[in-house]
Length: 133
Image 1 (cartoon, helix red, strand yellow):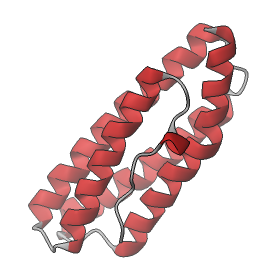
Image 2 (cartoon, one colour; image 1 turned 90 degrees about the horizontal axis):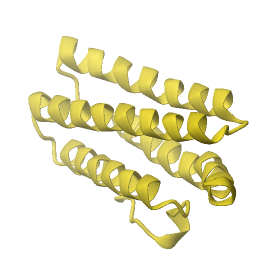
Image 3 (cartoon, one colour; image 1 turned 90 degrees about the vertical axis):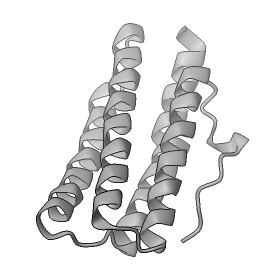
Image 4 (tube, one colour; image 1 turned 30 degrees about the horizontal axis):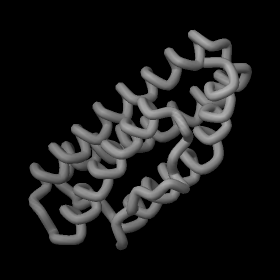
């Protein structure tokens, strides 16, 4: 599967959120390449752990900004965040228990989720923050 390439289309217009997204994309790309290369289960687990930890931090960051500025769509946005973290934690548990490889379907899910979330939900947050911050 192709890496995600950062471009201006993925920018939400808020530098601190864009910086977070660049890091998440870099970590996703590392996981993607590691899975494609057949890296060890231990390496995949470490990479997935780093991606999850950075994602959880990023979501907390976004949610703090939403609270600070009174973002009206906070609850559905938080629900979308929980959906991804729950799915990633399930994969993490499977990886820890069975040593299975991260599948191409899971990589595709992460790719689609990350890009669609940035291009839709986070764009709305960025537009809101540009008006009020």
